Image 1 (cartoon, one colour):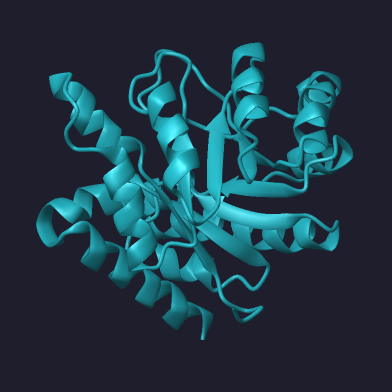
Image 2 (spheres, one colour):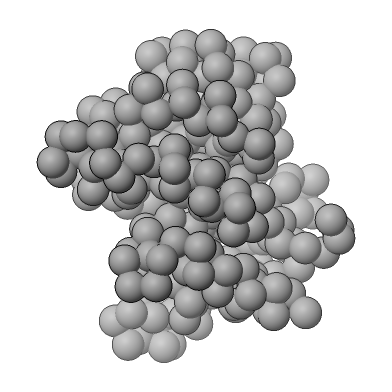
Length: 248
């Protein structure tokens, strides 16, 4: 793989959302993960929420068995989730904020205020061989705190940029994009590996994909939605094409 190639992680959470709406076994997130692999995904992301609203414990068990690409296990910083991660030892663990009432992850993790707690929380995960990623806003204070606690990776929250774009507010979107650009470079200068994700679509992915410091994008909801119209493999293939085009 070229050092310049941008990796694509496909989040399969919302295949499980559709399955759980009927309480059955279909559609199967594991089948989606296998299709995503075949379509060129470099990794699979799954968020095991405390309330199990989409991905289940059995899904994580199955993913660890069938995946031939890395699993990025998204989780809250709780004792329960730490135990699950230590049992499975996925390739990567991404620590995200989580509130029961939210529809989706609303912002980045507050690392600076919880620095000591998070440092102790991630230490056993690192010792177990998991790459620890912290999902944060494009904010210098949070990036510095993530670096101090020993995270190897940060994932920058692209949601505000995507929301402003969808709302037809180009000036606000441009401001958010510039912040993402600056903080990608800053995090890279500290030695952190930089990922990005949340809300990215065909219309918004290329400016972020063009940042040379970003090594991976994690995209889920849009791809699962687009799969309704064109199928999962073509949806991922088109995203891969746009990312590669942006990377040049």
